[in-house]
Length: 336
Image (cartoon, rainbow, N blue to C red):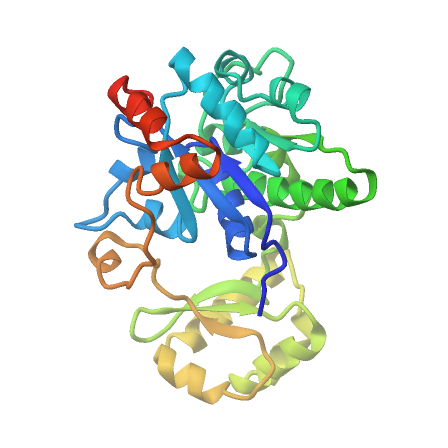
């Protein structure tokens, strides 16, 4: 069956995770994503390896095409213009001044191609005192109050959140273009995406005996999420402690007592024993699985294929109107 974004072409000027994940979502929906990479090594994720694999690049760049283009070369400008002419969407993740200098910012591209939807993912937005400040996910989470020292953050929630916001905004802009015939500029801030997570309660605020991790007899862990009374009742009855049902959201000293009682009970059986006992019971009890990409496990996964660096350069430039002679000239001059 045709996918919903078939026929939509995306020029992906981004680097690293946020942009790559945003365009992955579009590619999986059928968009033709053309990943523009520096001829001198490509996206930095290509060099991030776990064991003998490149899980980050491979996972984030399936269903895409790779074109090498040296954006710093003035000779790249006509190439960018020709590619923009056959595209529906562009997306970059440079600092605002860098995007303008390279000629891939929304204002520059839409001046010649008004039907384009031009998205920018930046650290702290397109203006303001932090607009040109360098940062990564850990910094955005820190500024948003999502980190509890001394623990470092786990999932890259700022990067992933920004990617999701960007893909949703791009889809909305494409729908708007269907109605008006005119594209638009989409701006997403990774710092803003981090702050979006802070709007909601954290597990620290929800923590009580009914919403916690418990160690089992074999030193594995289970997660309990029995926030609703019916789930809490089912859990208490399942562990043979119906007497704890009245203490669903107990706090203070009473809450600590309930925690302690449940901890003792959960350590009497293995994780498999508990999962068997609660099979078919609505108690919101699950195993705590190991991290998917622990170093010693990453090579076990059959990761999807991503394009080799520059694998599609000639095919895409041919589509944009560059004949073999012009492509060869660009190659000799180091532009592609």
